[in-house]
Image (cartoon, rainbow, N blue to C red; front, top):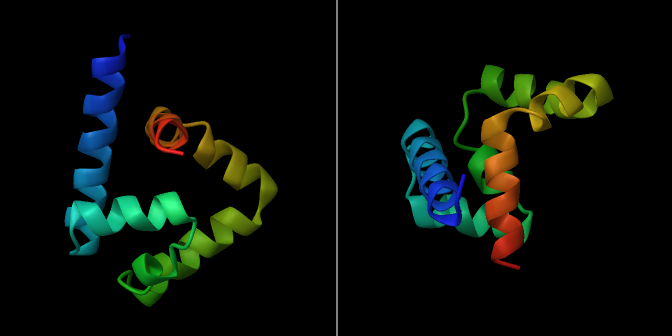
Amino acid sequence: MNKTDHTGNLDELVGRAGKALGTSENEVRKAAQSGDISKLLGKLTPAQAQQLKQALSDENAAKKLLSTPAAQALLKGLKKNE
């Protein structure tokens, strides 16, 4: 997979996240790059926010989540923008 493919995947992921959260792609990118996702978490339903917090607090669940292709593409894209 070349660099363009990764960029396309990242853009698609950010776009999907923005739509799912009812916010702009730019806001999703800023939150991800700064590491402060609290504003984005505020856009989730209480049940969704609880599920995400629970998954991230469980080491095995967090590793499983972060090992998904979508999460890996997001992490690679964020590292390029540092």
